Length: 285
Image (cartoon, rainbow, N blue to C red; front, side, top):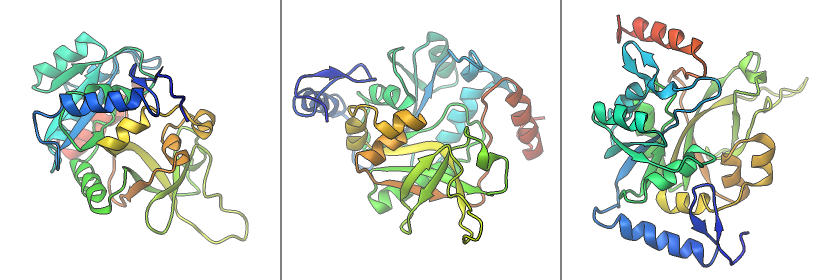
């Protein structure tokens, strides 16, 4: 638990459990009061220009369009999304986003995660559900975003995400860069890990493995609390910030998509792979 005295979280926002957080939340509600928030969902795409493995990645051209534009168009096509925003720390991304008609919000360059960046970006935006759409997923199906939001609203979960089936004999199952999630009988997350879980011990019963996709939906009040919690022990161990939510007792709904397919861009070589898939779908020549 944070102390009574204010501290600064990753979002650059002064927070404390009893004083600073209360002031911050009041400010958040006041600045977003001009538009009714109830029932309004916004999608926010965090986009940094700096990247160790792929500098300038959001503006990399895919079929002649910036990757960020592909992501924004898919988010806009999702049912139930009232507005799409780009949260960035670079003027080049702001100009690009505005060039294809998407509002961009400048945020601090010091954020430790995309979630922190999103929390700052929505300070003046009315919404009761916020969707974090990864800026390097140009093939994310709009219907997946729509179903995630609908599932959140139907179940009352504080946070939601998406997973797809993963074969336990596949290379990805043992890849630490492929995050796995284990869920309970109600469809809520029990644990996320880079390790191959659930592990099929010899003689044990078969159990489905799930590949976690990095798209999240948050209830606004939960997001406001989440960014004011310090990194948790399991989060620091696995380097997965969603574990912070679980360690603080939050309920994370997991929408299992059995037929959806996507492809992320991590390194420059991935651009050609995505373009190949777009050609197969007839979206580019």
